[in-house]
Length: 503
Image 1 (cartoon, rainbow, N blue to C red):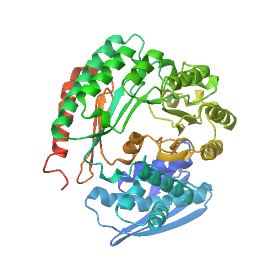
Image 2 (image 1 turned 135 degrees about the horizontal axis):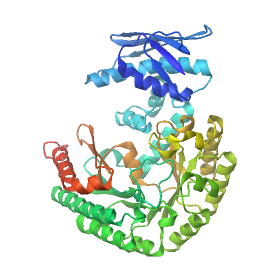
Image 3 (image 1 turned 60 degrees about the horizontal axis):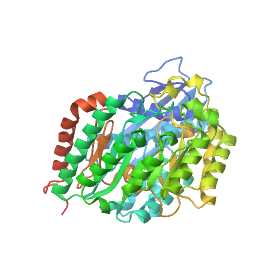
Image 4 (image 1 turned 180 degrees about the vertical axis):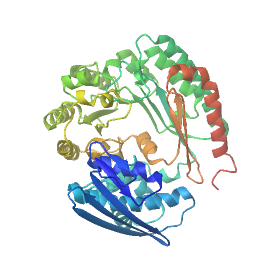
């Protein structure tokens, strides 16, 4: 779809307008001049004074015309970036309206294309805005539907029940530890993950660097008296390494990190069933870790083969029972809606198999075509369900979880997600992952250790976020882990200095 945009000269509008257009059309191209070969033309008029007034007139090739107008108060802006954000949202408002009118498609998340919609509601509640007023503002400002606002409200309430002090944890941190190895690479994946076979030298070098980071960050935390809220071992697949390597890693955690016995939650992703062994489960139990993920993604064998997962459905079920027998008391399982070749029938089967196991939590992901994934590079090879069927699968997941006692407790979205939907974590009451809440709602610093791990430093006073990423490939990580650790400690010194501490 070629869309000619008139009346907006700032090229910063191009990306948000393209993202919104892609919600409606398979491939969109924004043209910033009048041209005869555009499929549609949208002419904007924009006035910014004490308030923002935007109008848009859409004309298609048949001469059909649609019109929308929106006006909002211009709130105080601390920066040019914040000022433009308000203008961009107003422009997006009329743009979405005319595209909805043209296509007949309602975007339930309105103009939102970001990852963390629940943050918007948290922010309003922290500012003391009553929930009913906050809901109305979300609907008016962002065009979010009542259905999605109700979901946001349910999740925010659950999070505040699980972590009552969520808004006052800025002086604590969580730790993410990335293990960048998997048995094989899944077709939809863009995580820094390398097939582990034949890479033992890389693994040994990487683990040496990771132990160094853990020691140095642990020393800093102890010296500054900073507590750890949660620790999360992700990847890749953290259980790809050997039982002995896992044992030494958790021993390092207990030796290096402060007050480990009082950390609220330690999670290890054992997502690939083909990495789980009795020896590794023994190691987890030895170090008092009983929260793991075992991720089927699908219970259809043909699907697993198509996406590059070399375990079997039977293996998933057997490893789940093994983990349960060996003391794993909080197991999460991931399912993905919209995998290649799957529709409502296959997803119904996956839910029926999940019902036989009843893990403590189920995370329902909607397939996203991530730019660098094998699946995106070869879209014609991977046929996926259409928007209507994907939405039916999501509705089925909502009904199934409610019927079986699961409640939604965290949510995030991704670019190019099928049906413009979302990923939702459901759990049985009091079995929620605190780390998932912390990473999504950005209320505290999360320090990333290991290859490909991202740190998110949040100023305890201003809330400003600083991102810092370790390199994604093991060689670069091994060559520079000491320097990356030092850089992170400098940022932490600045954020948690006496000058920067809240009173």
